[in-house]
Length: 131
Image (tube, rainbow, N blue to C red):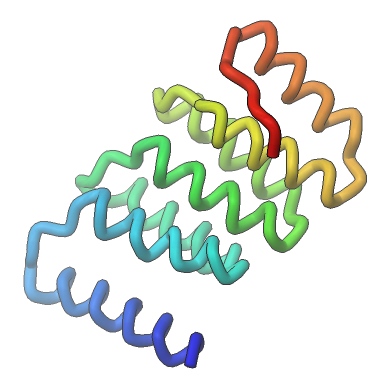
């Protein structure tokens, strides 16, 4: 079942760390992506925080998966905070970043914030697409 699969993923991830294996952003992105897919926003945020405290540099996929996890659970404020952290972390937001942030705001009825993201997207000449 899903819960068992995620438990195994977490255990494997933890095992890699205890064995002093070289954990890279692909490992982090895979686990955060699994959290996003299943709406586990708190775990995704914790993992993103873990990346920030490790030697691994988060990339756009790391941030996008975390924003998507927040978006799936209508946690627009968390999604916006991750988006802002992305820019502060010197990672360039892409179309996926903007779309996930816009969707998080929309799901929570925060239309003004969604429109602000869309405006920034257009001004920044980020390629928009249809969700």
